[in-house]
Structures are given as structure tokens and as C-alpha cells.
Image 1 (tube, helix red, strand yellow):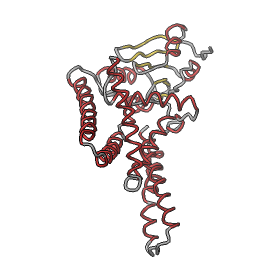
Image 2 (cartoon, one colour):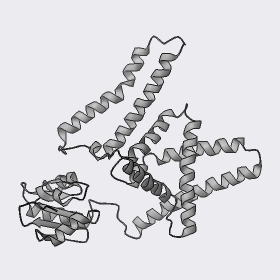
Image 3 (tube, rainbow, N blue to C red):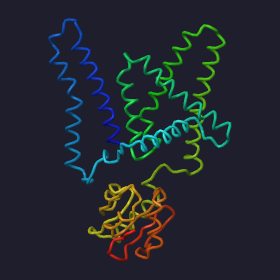
Length: 313
């Protein structure tokens, strides 16, 4: 998803440049004779992106696909994305464990989206590029097959900034002092909720042993060490993070996101983790009799294929 986020920056820049070019072409003002130099500078981000992509494709292990393959342009994906990311936006303000808290958190999430949209409209001239980026990223994520709150962190500060612009505009134009006080108090309360939720996450990591490190923890390294010692270079593993597995073990791997047991046909081993959400594949591993668990710890279970014929449902 990192590449897709970078492409989001580039697409927002392309949209911004197109708008600026349109304004330049329809402007009746006398054009600057140094426009050729300006165009060459504008092309630098696109040229550097193309060069970086060529270098990464030449130096890094080919994946057999791209992150764009994980986009599904359908009405179901769009509706599901709205539901998931609205929940993610709410989670920045708290967890709805009680009905009244759920209502407050839902109201804060809705208010954030409304104020962000209002702020983008207000600052469409000064902050046009950032507005394109926020709207473009939200639209991209709605069609992306993975839902992660970490994706939102790339533009969440900009949403807060645009919300600030909107609140400032409202406060400046509202005459009654008591209404201004209510708006300021509401804005302060929302900021306190964001800070409290952030501190809760910090507490969970620092005190309650909640780990955000998926690679360097003891269980993961133990699993990778077993694979390095017991698998050879000709073995193929079905695993959620194929590039990570290859980087640490030199063993090839692949992954599909559709929970179809037939996808296991090419794999000699299947590495399942607590992060996998593929119950159909897990049932085949446990009940088909074609796989044997050869390694297991609290996070991972490695299954070896006993029969070479592929599974058919």
C-alpha cells in the first residue's frame, strides 16, 4: 500500500497541475515568457517517480503483480469501504463500548467528515493540492481490498487542518458570544478525545505488552528461523506477507486474498498467522488430511502438504 499512497500524492499533483494549466490557458493576462522553465520544473516529480519505479523494478524481487491489482471497482466494494472507513474515522475518537459512547463517537466521526469537506471548499484556492489529496485518497481507499486505519494516518492531520479552517470560519461569522463558546468547547472536546485515544494506544503498547511490531518479535523470528533451517530454495510457501518471508528466509511465497482453498495448489507449505482471516483455507488445513502441522507457536502455524494433487472443493 506504500506505493499506492505515493501514487496518491502524484495523482493529486497531476490534478492540481491540470487545474493550474487550465487557468493559465484561459487567462487573458500577459503570459510570462519564462513559462518553458516553469514547465520543466513541474515535470521533475513525474520524471523522478518514473525513474524510481524503474530502479525499484530492476533491483527488487518481482511480485508477479502490483498493488493496483488489489483495487476492486464495484458497488459492493464501494459500500463496504464506506462502512469500514466510517468506523475507522470513529475509532480516532474512542471505542463505542457503551451505547451513549457509540453515539458520541459516531457524531464526532460524522462531524469530522462534514467539517473537512466544508474546509476544503473554503480553502479551495489556497490549499487546492491538499484538498485533491484528501479526497483522492478517501476515494482510492473505498475501492482498495484492504482496510487499515494506518492508511488514514497519511491524510488524517490534513482533515484536522481543514476542520480547523471550517471552525474558524464559523466562529468569525457567528455573532452571539455564547454560540462561539459552544463551538470552541465542542472543538476542544473533540481534540481531547483524539488525544485520549492516542494516549490509550500508547499505554497499550508500553504497559499492556500490545505489540505493533509484526516482524522483529520473538515468535516471528522463531518461525523464520525454522523455515530457514528446514525448507529449501525449491519449496513454495503460501503466506500473508510473501515478500517479507522471502526477505528473511530466501524462500519463495505467494498469497491470494479470496479465501479459496484451490489457491493452495502451488504451495508445498502453508504458513498461517493470527492475522489471517481465511476460515475456508484453515478448515482445509485442519480437516482434509492433506496437510500436517510441522511447526507452531502462539502466532504462527506451518503446514506441510502431504499429497501433491491439488484440492478441489
